[in-house]
Amino acid sequence: MRILVVGSGGREHALCWAIAASPLTSALFCAPGNAGIADEATCVPIAMDDLDALVRFTRDEEIDFVVVGPEAPLVAGLVDKLTAAGIKAFGPTAAAAILEGSKAFTKDFCARHAIPTAAYGRFTDTEAAKAYIREQGVPIVVKADGLAAGKGVIIAETVEQALEAVDSIMADRAFGDAGLEIVVEAFLVGEEASFFALVDGTNAIPLVAAQDHKRVGDGDVGPNTGGMGAYSPAPVVDAAMSERIMAEIIEPTVRGMAAEDRTFKGVLFAGLMITEEGPSLIEYNVRFGDPECQVLVMRLMSDLLPALIASAEGQLAHFDLRWFDEPALTVVMAAKGYPGAYEKNTVIRNVEKVGGPDGAAAEIGGDIQVFHAGTTRDGDGRLLAIGGRVLGVTAIAGSISDARDAAYKAVDAIDWPDGFCRRDIAWRALERG
View 1 (cartoon, rainbow, N blue to C red):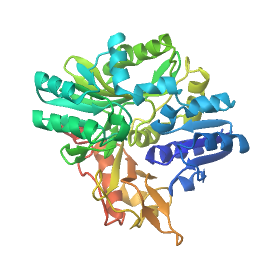
View 2 (view 1 turned 90 degrees about the horizontal axis):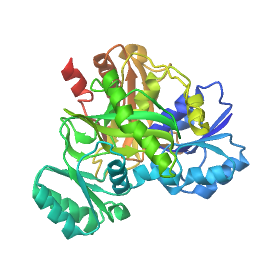
View 3 (view 1 turned 180 degrees about the vertical axis):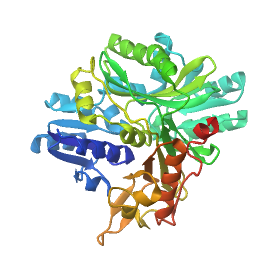
View 4 (view 1 turned 30 degrees about the horizontal axis):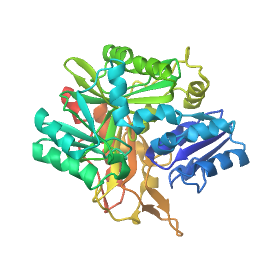
């Protein structure tokens, strides 16, 4: 099969790495890709928001199947356009992608279908939002309604912080049009987890759970980011909790979306808070997580591509995936200054000496893969950092402690003075012992 993956981040590198290994793959392309993806696929210089150009490319290259990685082209309707052109694609239609495209829609949807989630209000007026905040008290969570690259969420510990968040999002447009409406919701107490399920419109099958680290600093301090690291499995999601999540959150969502003429196909990524009462939905994403996708593909024993095709074709009813028992862990290396301003085009060295079969994995003590996100190569072949989150250094080993040790040894072997990372990935799992 001739496959096109759309996107340029660490998630797309992980997807390309897994799809390239499938015996079904005869040719693999990625638009626009990055320096790491270029080792797995032919990168084509088409922006992921240029939907018409992507459709033309699939026709010109006789692409059999398209895997859409990021949320923006899904919300914009890329799958709809591909389907209309007769091209099979993995991912939801625009009508179904609204689960990520609008947090306000999702909160109302949960209310309609009795899906557990935090109490909330939705607002297009700043003064009404501020009045609600004063009435509810703190801590409280303020969210931009639309897509904000994982950064449009502010956890306020004082009323003043919450009021400033309202002004930042709605008046100052810190996240652009994503802040035309906001959701203000109760702060949930518990442990966060990322839960994934493949969906074919009717059936859903769970994938292994993971845990992300959103805050930029060690100890979960500082502003939210797109994710500074992840690990799988997540101890807080055992077999019994997984069954509850499927029964109380995923399956009602699949049924509800079909009933509302928004049939969902693709991957449902439920950001959850596991509270004393059970799982509660924080938000939905309609694509694989980044950096969670990196640890998932490292643990996946089965061929990923047939599962994605089965999702698109409505054939998941009797599908089964097999996973390695060993845990995997990703450490994100980001440009200094991220998630604020950062310098671009800084040089990264020694990446090739770390990951893959020809790297230093044997010396480091784990199976290592370095998944690229914001990277490119200059005319001299040097690896340059051009994004905020740049590398996802991923290890799989016999224990979460061993995986973490291997990942950080690999991080330390990479020469990038202008980068940084968190040093406490998987601290919750290690605290549990």
